[in-house]
Image 1 (cartoon, rainbow, N blue to C red):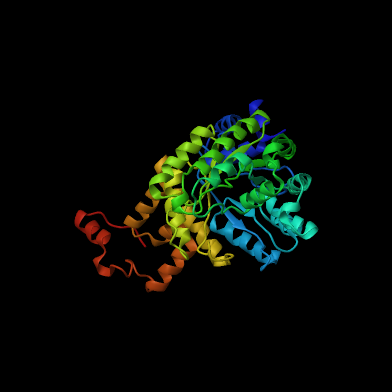
Image 2: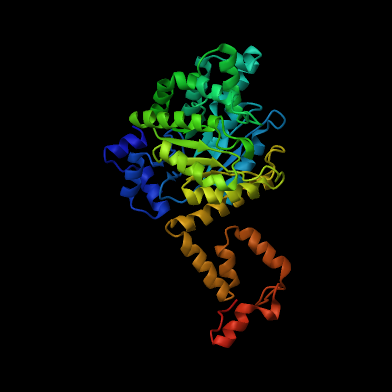
Length: 432
């Protein structure tokens, strides 16, 4: 029985109770959200040691960190180190996007080591195996695609990106769209190449019921991928993107009918003035399904600083109703991220998510900021460091730029506004 099927029967599962505990909400609120499809809980029963997380309406905005091997860097141990860094920095989920080395081994090691939900993009492994087996990605068969999906589900993967909305019809829209970047999704490009080569419909769309059967059996959350997401600002919110979203809206309803949990992925590169429109469009067309966005990046020219461009877009998107932010690292568009890139990407996304949670009125979000304000007023440095979103970095910076025992910070020194006004108003600060 899936989480959704249990919720519809009035059952509050242990996973629902844990999510309620983490969110500070009644368990019945979580059950009702899962039953309606506005909340998903990625919790494959085969994932041992999982600490369940909820994603969706009314919950804290969640952060995903992408890790995974490549053909140039196939060592799974390096990705396990990134997993540790991502979780320490506060990522709520991770996705294994491995394309190099032993893909089964990498995934199994990550699932085994991660207490957080783990996601994958199965078409990546299907393409890698087809290239090794047949000498060509387009030579893979539909059965081989579904065999990989089944294998990954059996290994305990909690959610999967599946590019079901890239169809012959949406590709035809793309042909006449006048896009600059065409398709930037790897999964979308693999399936587009396969369809055009064979002159056949996307198996993930044509055999969607087969996909639902696997997802239901393993209680895997389907993350309906945006294979036609815009790869630059000029391509944002065009006919191809919207045509795919229309298809995904229909597939959301079919998944819910089968009791399969489902969320929807979104762009991508979007001008700041179009971000809210994109979120509202998804929420309307996909019946309030949880929305998972990559960034979005609000400029194309921030190479080396794309985590900042993504945090700006992510804050606006989440404030408008997006539920799940995929981090972007400083290495985006440049290369495979380092450990420090992973950490910076997670922290930037967390800042965006928290800013949005304050705006959305998520329980506890604004109180966190009020506690920090009180600590700053009191010049209570230890409490400020405890409350910092990244306590380790805040503590290090404080130690580097201030002599031990200093009451005020080295920016203002004896001219500290809070200390001066406190004395004038007769409001003494607490001990530092």
